[in-house]
Image 1 (cartoon, rainbow, N blue to C red):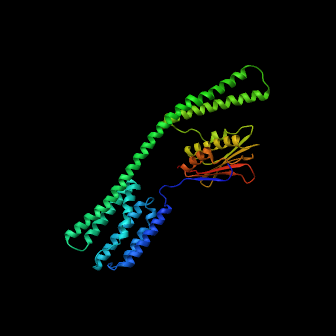
Image 2: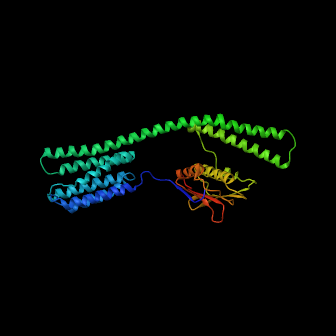
Image 3: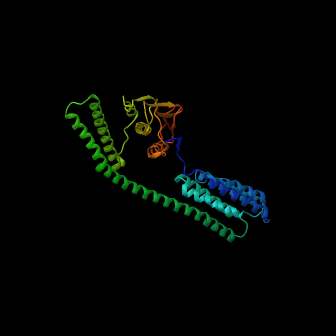
Length: 370
């Protein structure tokens, strides 16, 4: 567990390195084509328009409507300018890569974006076809070909969108089945053993007098087993009936983590205004797991401090201990699970050795409604 581990959410629609490589390659191809072709009436204007539009391709997933409107306006504007100047419409072969834009619109756009973008695409194709030189039949053929190309790109995007949604539904169904199976296993195995621990502790306490340390230990065992059993039953209910689950944990439960120990746990909370319920639940779960990890993994722990406070518009949770960190054993599922909870709310979590020794975990979550 040595080292510093940083966790944050990743936007799957953000530009990627391969997008930049693709855009650069296409731009280079467009410039080369513009320099080599002699049949372009406006070579520099055509190349400039193509380069500008190709440069926006890396953002096609995040802003499909903006790119669609930009492509429709710019290409239609070029067609109108060429018609007014009395020159035939022309384009580069590399402009076929711009079919990624209508594909992206139907693949990643919202319902409103798809509606507005489709109208803009249709207008652009029809205006360009109407302004084309040649006979009526030639313009009609041009319109049909343009609609065919753009429509095919849109159709592929829509099919890919539906396929992705179908896969998500299959994954959701599989998760529901896994949750049910996990709830059954938890109830049949772990809950049974925790119940046995609580019963044995109660029986040992009732047999007769013990030393103060033994009596205290038995009391702690009974209380912790009862609390764990309650948590286990709540988890089982959540897994079996996810739709009816309503998180109830909050800042009061974080304060309840304070204990005389060993090791003693101190809790300080200075949060105003109160965060949304889901944020409070996440903070509680992270604090609970962090305290558990400190008790379980750190060596020679003298104290554990939990501090939660408001900084600007964020709620910051800090959990630190003064123990020695054991040898590295990887990030572990506990840290990963906490990081995923925080990232889902747009937050960030860091964990690693503290500047003055021990181990420190810090989670920062926006305090507003997610």
